Length: 140
Image 1 (cartoon, one colour):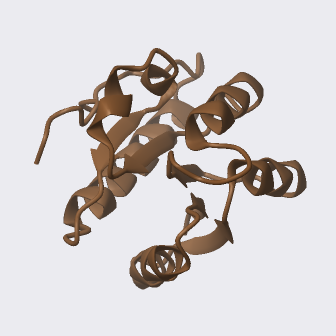
Image 2: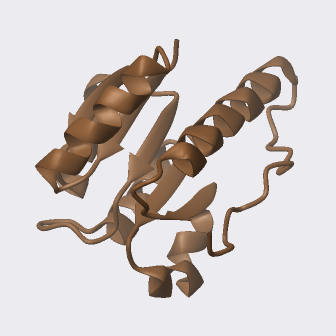
């Protein structure tokens, strides 16, 4: 069971993602802003982060920069409705970029793949990312 942090300002989406990922047997914690996500990371270790981009207080791009500078081994999925962010240089720090959809199968598949890749890296002594996972920069 993986511990996943979902960072999403829309309450209904947070709860939907929580329910879907709990059905996949993951432990899920929720944050509604980038600042709240950073506070969660100070208190607990996570196996993966799903991060929205457009949020109040601290947006996902700013949070991504802070997360990847402090927590290099935690995979991050940028999950947004806005494709224009995919070309921002900071967005390239994410392990995957997925456009939001009512069908969560791509999100759940990407979560599974990133967790499997993280597990393989953990077994690899040098701990480097293999980058075998496609970056998910294609439109659905």
